[in-house]
Length: 111
Image 1 (spheres, rainbow, N blue to C red):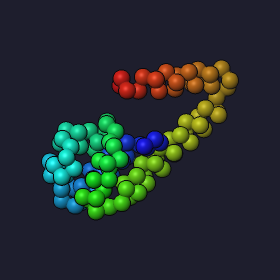
Image 2 (cartoon, rainbow, N blue to C red):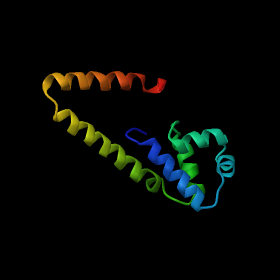
Image 3 (cartoon, rainbow, N blue to C red):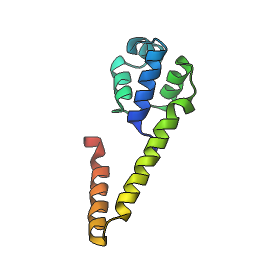
Image 4 (cartoon, rainbow, N blue to C red):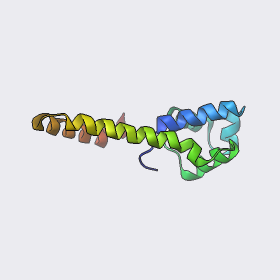
C-alpha cells in the first residue's frame, strides 16, 4: 500500500472506531492483533497489512475506500506541495533539496 498517509489513515480508523463504540482492546481482539499494534496503526507509526485493513473495515462496517480516501488524497497533496517547492528553487538549491529528500527517504525507518 504505497502513497498512503498512514497518520491520516490511523486517525480515520481511530475516529471511526470510537464512533462505532469499539475500544482498542475489542477491535484488536476481533482482528487478532495486539492492542499495542492497533495503537501504532492509529498513530500512523506502523504499516498494516491488507488483511488487517480488511478486518478493521469489516468490523467497523465501512469500506476500505472510506478509510483510505482522505489518506491517499493527503499523500498526493503532500507530493504536490513538495513538487511546488522544488520547482521554485534555483538549480543549486534544487540539487541540495533533492539530495536532502533522498537522504531522509533512505533513513525514514530509523526515525
